[in-house]
Length: 136
Image (cartoon, rainbow, N blue to C red):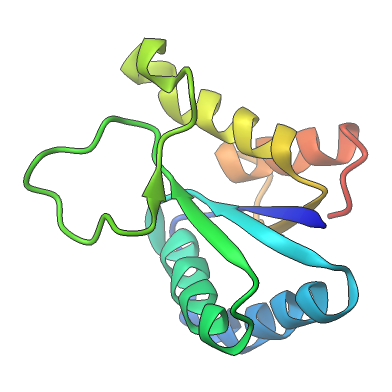
């Protein structure tokens, strides 16, 4: 059983959704990926979450978690598929996203990225995934 995580720019276009779905189905069907971790910042994460929710009906043996960087507010809706990694509660808020992303990368065998430029968190974690010899 393998694990996959995701890093992408906030402004990702929804036109990549069909390709994202194809790649995820390939990982599930041919690479035995059964666990997925995704963040919750921006369009890319929202798109991944929606595709994983859809695929969980077609492939009921997979699981996914939206990994939060901060403790949720009491009034936040749509928290059913979220999780907090153990230890995040001790991290100062300004470092929480980077800490969460490192945690997701450590868990992963596969990393799917949407990176169009060389700056920002998505580009940084793409490079970290390559250095860590993850399948990107």
